[in-house]
Image 1 (spheres, rainbow, N blue to C red):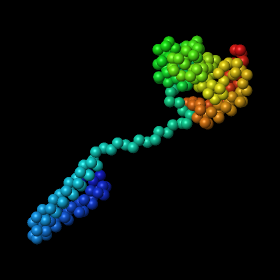
Image 2 (cartoon, rainbow, N blue to C red; image 1 turned 135 degrees about the vertical axis):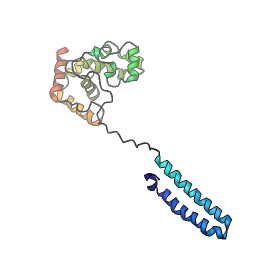
Image 3 (cartoon, rainbow, N blue to C red; image 1 turned 120 degrees about the vertical axis):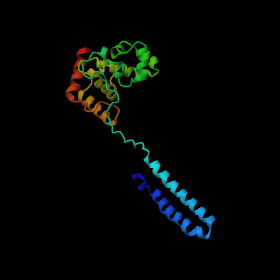
Image 4 (tube, rainbow, N blue to C red; image 1 turned 60 degrees about the horizontal axis):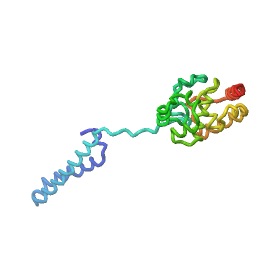
Length: 218
C-alpha cells in the first residue's frame, strides 16, 4: 500500500469494516446460512475494492494549487524597449505609449505609424479612426508622444504628465507649477491611475527640468 493510502480515512474505514466482515462470513455465517455468507463476503470484497480505488487514485499526481501572484500595485506589464530620457523616438515602438497595447499597436503599424516618432506627425482624428477610439484618447496618446520628445522626459514621465495632470501641450507644461505637478502625479500613483515600473520615482528636481525645457521651446 502506498503512504497516501494510510492517510486516507475512507480507505482505512473500509478495511476496518471489510476484513472482519470477510472473516465472519467465512467462519461463522457460512455454517449457519451459506447464501447469507456469500452476500456478506461479496460486501467485504466491495469494501476491499473501494479501498484499493482510493489508494490508486491517491497515487496520481495532483495539480498544484496556483499561488496568488503578488504584483506591485503600480507595476506595468509592458516594459518599454527604451526607458531613458532623450531616447530616439524612432527607436521606440508605438506600444511604448501607455494604452497602446498589441491590438492598437498592430493597427497603427499597419497604417504606417510603427514608432513614437511617427505619432508626432498624425492628427488625433486619424488615430481615433484607425483604432476606433475617442478623439480624446487619441489626443492623450499623441500628447505622450510629444512630451517624450523632450530630452528631460522619458515615456514614463510623459505618461504621468498626461494622465495625472491632464496637461497635453508644451504651453500647458511650461506654465504649470512644478510642485503642483508632482503632487498630482503622486496622488495618481497612489490611486493607481498612473502605473510605472517598480522602483521608478519622481522628484521635484526632475519636474522642474520638464517645465524649464518646455519654457525654452515655446
